[in-house]
Image (cartoon, rainbow over all chains, first blue to last red; front, top):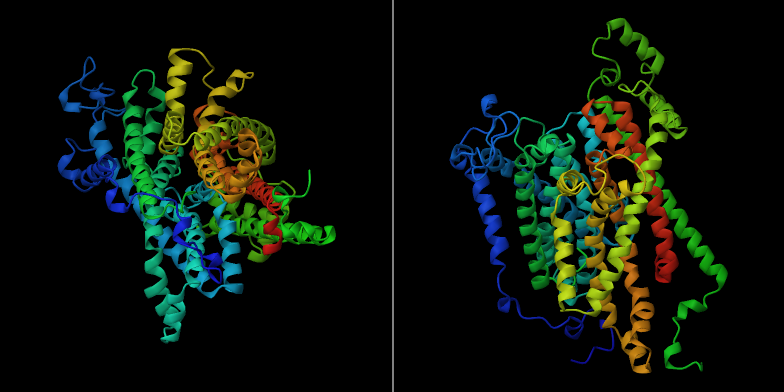
Length: 298
Length: 329
């Protein structure tokens, strides 16, 4: 297809987009989807699935090894921790905390970030410049510093973790969505909507927003994994979900001193994090390659 | 060489030197202002949070303090004065490095920061060196040899690097490499070998992101017209890759360098904690477990200032390597 000589220089022609199989030809990433589905089900059904109360202590049964090790029993399939709590039950309940924190923080961040991006891209000029300065300043700020301050002043809690993460993470969405909107604004259909008498609100919600949805979905999926790791790191440092709530990060922290004698206390929550984050990252990569190959950096 | 096809220079190179310098200075100044604003916002957040949660004295004074102690401390610290005045004096003291006394160590916080900061910087520089040394060759080779087993191996390393929780990797390494195998020291600073485990753990996370970015940037650039032209002209392939293509592929990497640094800082706090590295991160961890507010406040503000300086440096570097930036603003 010959490129349009006039006016189209800023736009991408079909020929600029590298050849790739059509979406329906690409196999669904069954394994990552399966892992995510299993973890979501486990989180929802935690009260039914967990064999024991995750808070119930039994000092007589401290540091019981997992069932396949010598001295292990089916009563504690993955062993017990320092206070004799059932590891399997704690990991099952911990999935609630991790997934909820991940999904909630990413949803808040994306809702706010996308709105900022849409407004900045639509209005352009001074509004855009001011909003983008704010975005730049936020983007390169380490989440952990805010979380640390919140942890010592207000005290660590689930809410603080979600707030600290989403207050920083929105910037990424704002930047990417704004870039897309700038490209969309050059297209004819926006001009036509204007001629038809559509106002700012209608253009943003009906015409611009639906066209950024693909990107938004890719970005959200790719960030959930990162946020789960972030939440776990904060809980590990004692600035996240406070004990005795079972959270994977704090479980790893509790097991750290006993790695040599009771490796399973730190090992299994870590594997759970690895599995769920890997699944989200692989799914996100697939979504990006399928729907939005231009988004390579994210 | 005759000025021919390969010598097409971008038009903006012809702009006068003064014009370029003026553009650059304006750019640097606007970015400097932006960093200062970011730091000011951070200091307000710290200031407000310390007060929003009730009496800041409850964060500073010991549990056993009497009413009289509170009254004295309030007058001594100037907490009975208006908020604006309090904020200004807080900033004034912070700028001169006075962050008060640590509640736990019973030492001025500035002294603690002075002891720990160099250790953190040394570790960060080592980790950054490690990740650059791995990410660059690997990212470029993965792009050049796209689709080969080397490319796939690089992809696996990248995905694992982004999916493995750093603190967990650190614990596993301490247990196996330092504990069971006794190959390397488990923690603390004791000669070069003690840098290896924390340095690689810290560097790996950065390698993952940087390598992916470089690979995709290289793929895009290698497919561009000017690289094709260089090949048609008969430029040797390794020169095409390492000189012509790499120069432009670096731009997105530099763009993201500031964000990588923010991630490095976050990760460093965790890594230092596990490896008992006497740096700022470990100090922050100790500060949280004893709710030592002056220490956390100082660590957060110091780190914030370092991040701001690094970002400013990155922006300047960006403006130097990509002349389009200087004119866009």
